[in-house]
Length: 343
Image (tube, rainbow, N blue to C red):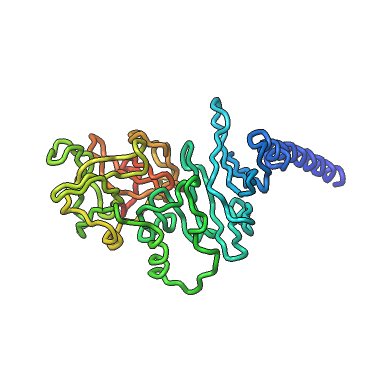
């Protein structure tokens, strides 16, 4: 028995040694301090954190005394890429109780705590607020997952840390006995829907066509369900030019829809969307074979809860058009990957 215990103890010591060696190269303060000093020799490091995806966030003090967030990612052959934020409130630090990656904006004094992540190359933004009080995407705020009635699309100012006003976040506070309607009203007020629209037929059997050329039915790109988030590029009496997806080119669809099929601005709040369901046997979604230049790549079941099913593609095979909430990408997945209740 003693011999067995000695062997177990020896194995544990070896494992602990291996873990310590690994941590020495990653999470230890020396690693972060050395990285910080290499790129920001004129700044002082106030705090730092290595995120699960290998990106790094620092809070640094500039020579002028202001605090800023410094977010970096190793781009391989291109080396490290860094993005510097607008000035943070004095006293900001990283970590908020058990939410270790939060940027704590004096939450214990009535400020907010927000999560910051790399949205795409060269751009970092906020993705949750106040210990998951609500989530933030490039074009929306709301509750992540299948609560499609609690995702509010519009323009907000939290998607880019280089222009963000950190004082605009709601304070970290407990909101007791809040009804779903009250929560939705509170969260929906954080976006500006002035330049937004959505298809609205109030008939589940009807869809809205997106054409690459207005009045040309042969240029059909897809058919879209009620509630699809549309950014309005040009509105005319009969036809409206819209963009579906975030950004300029990558993972975006652009075309024309009939104006009579759409509602605009705050009226988009009253359009219902279908909830997302996945067939139980489909544990791994098929690789996205026909993404429209999308960054999202292959979707797993967990990631799939972060998608809206927004339409049907005009292709030889049956594909659903999805809106990938974290990045605002638009792409296609086989209809056979979907369960009942989509679209």
